[in-house]
Image (cartoon, rainbow, N blue to C red; front, side):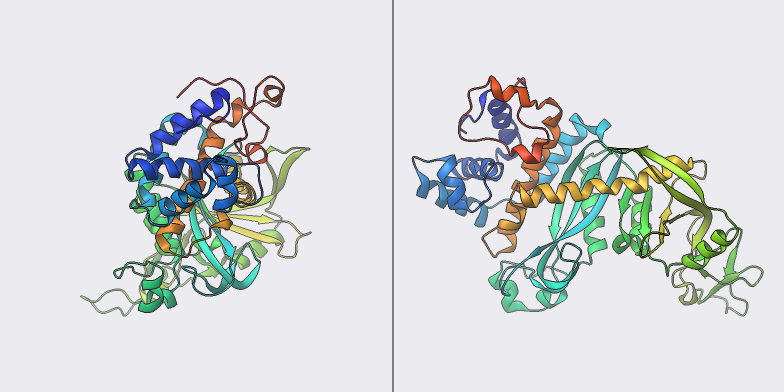
Length: 433
């Protein structure tokens, strides 16, 4: 693999070798290295031809063809790259990861042949549109974040259509997974690769799933997830029991409070607390310009989803409520399995940490070419995703050593890591990995 920029180039060469060596033939591994470097170029067009013109100006067409074969027809699975990255981040930067966070992002697409494309809701678009959706896992803190893996969401219409599935290289045995199920699989893979256990964060698309929350607990992890205002819970102090009249030797069909209480929506609980002036200002961290704070209240509750259909109540957990009267939707709600002794500030800081994910998505799309893959197959898309994540983690691992002053003294070659994504600019002298 060719050297790029001074000592940084040697570090990048070693990094790519560590994470790519042996995943495919030597020729394809070298092509993958060129592709990864190309994604880090400070150029807007991340097509293979545009990247080849800079990565290998003396052999543009052959470089493009090799990259296309390596990504489009490679014989490795993206999970192998993600596993190596998880081990690296766990070894080198575990102290920089305070939580695991799951989320999904949309990639606008025209047509109907690219794998997974459909008219579906995308938070990125803010509406239903023609797009692909990717579920991702990140290791985050308030100061750094690492993408640890991802999986393309495959709508049921795709899973149930043999012709489209065959054209896009989707295996015959592929099964439909909801986004919470896919996220749970990503978390399990990371834990199986030895990644340190951390609390799991997610928005309401994940937090509203009782199965997802229970799956997190089954993995031995804690969670602090957003939920929707209609989520039903058993209020503080309520002890749910099987409804009287239940027949012996049959599964429970319905739960009710020991004193006849019924579940209550979290929005109604919040209004009760607001009426009794129970919300208090909490500052969770220092922002760029001023301390970040808002009004919060919390209660110990049990979740009550499907309690009329025999689903047992959860263990006691925190219901955290936030109010901001200036917003269109003044209340925000979170459920957390963190211990009862957890300080309010710690709990609030954790649920607010999800802001890092939007920065990752911005960098992966605007600077590392996540949304510019030219192929249509499932395997090709996941290999492209793996190379994007590979470069995102490299930048996140070494950004603290980057210094704008280095640009003035280093002799640079054409291939640069993505300067904007690295925040700040170039690089201090770094030792070889």
